[in-house]
Figure 1 (spheres, rainbow, N blue to C red):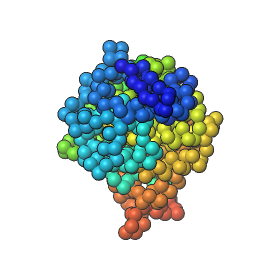
Figure 2: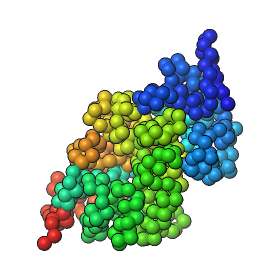
Figure 3: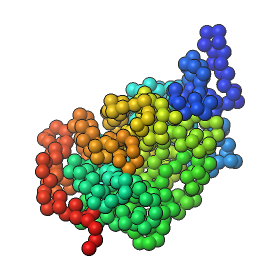
Figure 4: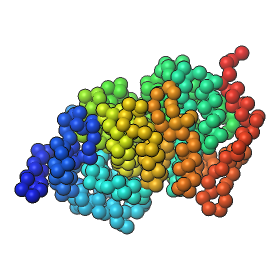
Length: 477
């Protein structure tokens, strides 16, 4: 159905919901590349005003990607929780924004509401939110997950220790691992992007991480970020797999381009659950079932020619429906990694990171963000510092920890171990409770006093621990 809004004497018409969402989206180089963006700021405002008047229930009847053509659309609509949606079903998008900003939207009510929201609903409301709205509303959402550490508790900020190496050299990886542990990083996951994506190498890296975690009783989980089919083969070979990783998209065609579908993700989740490697219990007293780690990024569907004429932020939100279905431990938007063709500069990256975190949290996901940019984007470290601080204020579950913030294997700029320490100190945040206790036990950190409880890491790492970690990466005799 068409939508319209008049500004002065100018009448704007938008042919369908897909077009309306795209025209209402804040300026994005990817949408311009796709030819779906608003022609100018006035058209964008007209679309946002029209979008604000759209009833939330409309999104249950008008699919932006056809139901019969797309298994992600079918997942979204077939699993929609009507009872959970009931408290807001009478609202328009604009009314919903106002309700989210009100005192009626508490952590408890938002958690109960999450199964009743579709990705398109939360994408729509994000488009009419200011930056401060995205921060305030996301901060109310608390999504807690568990494996060997508890992620997402209020007042906590976790990190992924990312010890990548351009040749997968085990000693180089061990050195980065040591550096990260010294600076209190790794409570979300110790995750390696392998340079050589073959199964034997994946298995070697999994054993390296498992040895470190087991030998020192580190309350964290490991992950080698390889394709889900490689992880399945590693499990078949008896490798110590904690988390199954996969990049995912918001349309069936995008996921086909990634070499996966929903059935394959379910197979991988079942295989990981069968290993029973989680040690913490969920709220029902059962062994935690949070065994998946997903990564996403605005623009992936467009780069695959699989966006169905939609804007990139709406499709990104749809990827979160895929993630939500598999109850992950971690979801990470790698916000600036895909490049300036999709997010041109620091302003666009900052806005996209806050939108992604907002949408994921409203949908009930444990959202983290790789606060990052590529060297050919119009962005710099100041932009990333601003986004990092805003995400910290918004209650982001985790960020990255990369030696020196420069990933020498993936060749992009992320956040360093020191950045996470700054964020924790400035905002009074702490590591995951199990990891915090381990740091104190190992002599790597002590409470800073009765105020923040912030970890202050000792100047010297115990020599025996240092030498032992370094030996993990030594060649076998």
